Length: 177
Image (cartoon, rainbow, N blue to C red; front, side, top):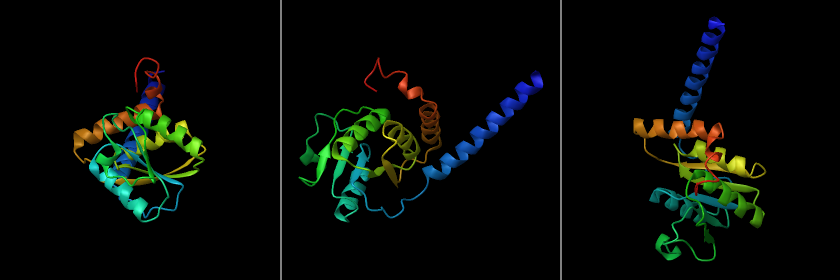
């Protein structure tokens, strides 16, 4: 019994190590040229994300830009988004909320292909939440640079593991995110 437990622990540890190496690869990758899509989704955060979203829109990657998780106090004009081509989502307070908010918007608008703009370290977790909320939508990653600080990467990896295991759903009834 101890041998089986030790073997299982070793297999789990090896699996986590492989998963972490994959995460580090994803957290440092550069964006591929954006394919044509129905919309561009920017998850709020650093200004680089909004800049990338605006550039993709200007380059014709999609006809619409949706920014999820915008603070209710922020006006659209403050973000410098093109009028008529962009919309703001104000409900999301975290990555899980971004998934729910973006999925609802994609369904209302009939989007089947959406370019996702967020930081490279955040992208794996964002995709987990988006795919969980709307598996019928093809979410196309367009990462921008993010923090490469070891502590920040470890925190993001821990959040990715929790999201992958579905732990982010547990607090949904008792909190905003």
